[in-house]
Image (cartoon, rainbow, N blue to C red; front, side):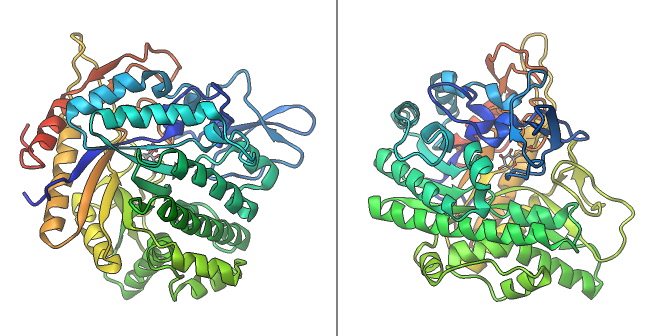
Amino acid sequence: MAFPKGFFWGGATAANQFEGAWNVDGRGMAMTDVTTGGSVKEPRMVTYIDKDGNPGKMPSFGVNGQALPEGAHYAVLDDCLYPNHDGIDFYHHYKEDIALFAEMGFKIFRMSISWSRLYPNGDEETPNQKGIEFYRNVFTCLRSYGIEPLVTLWHFDTPLYLEEHYGGWKNRKLIEFFTRYVTTCFNEYKGLVKYWLTFNEINNTIMMLNIFGHSIEDDQPYKDAYQHLHHQFVASAKAVQIGHAVDPENKIGCMICGITFYPATCDPKDILANRHQWEIGLYYCGDVQCKGEYGSYAQRLWKEHNAKPEMTAEDLEDLKNGTVDMYTFSYYMSQLVTTHKATDMVSGNFSAGARNEYLQYSDWGWATDPDGLQYYLEVMNDRYHLPMMVVENGLGAYDTVEEDGSIHDPFRIDYYRQHIQAMNRAIENGVNLIGYTTWGCIDLVSAGTGEMRKRYGFIYVDKHDDGTGTMARSRKDSFFWYKKVIASNGEDLAD
Ligand code: BGP
């Protein structure tokens, strides 16, 4: 096998999906705290109190702040269940969980810092010491096992206060607040954390907008998305500069939601549409973060929606000086792009387009496509010439606990085997891949649907969608399998 010595095998999580303790030790709220559970058919709902004091709900569109009805404010309602409130309570189980990761042999563990645990409203001058302490304890615990922390600074969790009172990332002020927050992180965790990611799946804002629902004629969501992204690009570039200044050892990456798009037919119009989908969905963000400037096609994209994102000369300077050290991405599926009317459509959470007859789809409508991972790795390796990490990949599936407590998940093992083989081929073809952190290495709350039963973990957590469960942890068959994979540096993929 081609995996280099020192390859970072591990797993990935996000604060809002697994920490729980949503209102403990001074933590402020994030959007996920006012978002209910859903399913593959039912959207998650964001809850609020309207201007007349009546409770209300609106479908949650993706991960970023959304406009409330005039005069309303976000609120936790008594009769709703909010799965992210408890997550899997990593906050109180971190020692046990990290011991299990160590038992599997993890070299790296991806987690995120909850911004509102450090800055509850987001615009304070000084951080919440209890939040700082919690992450210091977690990082110290990881290090005691020789596990390298890989820390995402923003994983869909802008403090709710900033969403409500500042309008979220459309507002330039957020750059300043984010900069203050990350400066605290880099200073406080100097020597404990070396690997950082700025914004998780930064491209979702524009890619999902383009794939789903919004009428192409309606310019406003696009204008907002481009402005929002520009602010995040500048914030990310500033974070990179600060991170390097605090500790030149820091390696800071971008994080892109990687979907491999294919043209559905050989009609040249489909080939072109597919190319444009890569531009708006994948390159738009990757180019700014890796190359330090907007791609030439950005002018065309903005023009299509009469967008003129406001930016200063200093911003452009910042983008140049804040390019990332590594390209990281999530990979779950490929999708088809076509200009023709497709009759057989995929519908799932966060997946869409025409169905690919050569692929199998998960119960949540995601196409399993390991070749797509190889393709993606090879394209992005050529484009950016940076070290790469696959920082999310996995299969959300139902698990059954047998009477004796065992959990047999051969489908998950098979999925990982195929994707590891695909990474192996990419490395043989020259891709500079340095790490792999599987998504939801321990079961956690789904971002898309808010479900617990969409499970990804090697470690099962006894927590259910109705809020019940003991939170007990147990090892699935895949736990023992992944342990062998890591011990053999990817050589031994047998059952
Ligand atoms: C990515 C997110 C993760 C994670 C994953 C799986 O988009 O970065 O937070 O949740 O997708 O998605 P889901 O939880 O919807 O199955």
